Length: 118
Length: 158
Image 1: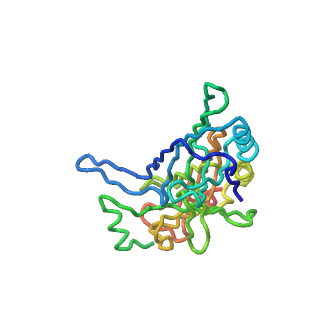
Image 2: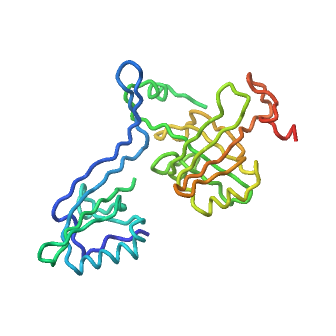
Image 3: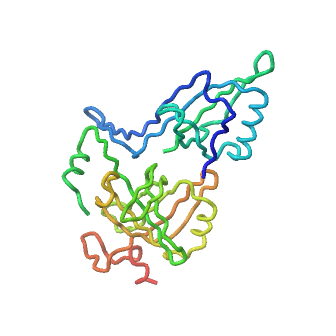
């Protein structure tokens, strides 16, 4: 049973982008156009999103990262931005998160990159 | 082994949406259930059994060679599985591999080919393990190019 992303945390509220990962196998002959076929049955995508956390939200996120995701290695459920936020998809962190503190020191802009599991 | 008309077309097509996939089964007396892996990123059901997604690269014996040696590199081999492979006696685990089309998994395009596992090596950093294999010849192996050599039939030569 996978953990869900904490409901108290904001989602990608200041923008996100998605990029599918290539699952093509391309072979290039000496002459003529290349041949292309599918390597796997499922195509995965990467979501990159940004959101703003308060201090307490940042602490909630850190707890989720450390205790439930084991420093980000485990997968979890996240709302699906493509089909609607009521659907949940299995994702995991594609890379380490990063954040910057605002100039007034009261909030943090977080960048999260998620890999959608096949 | 069946190459259907649809498969033949998929093989020669310039752009092909069919996925050709190797599936792998490893059996040993000490295993309750065989290990079943599909070289895909989704589970494949073949012969009524689920084959879990796991990347692997299979290197078959060189064509027209008397040497029956092959190898397979499997991704993400955990410590338990690695210990098991280290502990088994050479030749006691049997590996079967065959090629299927993912959208029609019960039609075998090539194989199954059976190999005995003769060695094991694990790269600890990447989690990838390589099994050395020796092709198991059928008893009536008298096809051209197949001879009873020390490599292909070690039991005959001690």
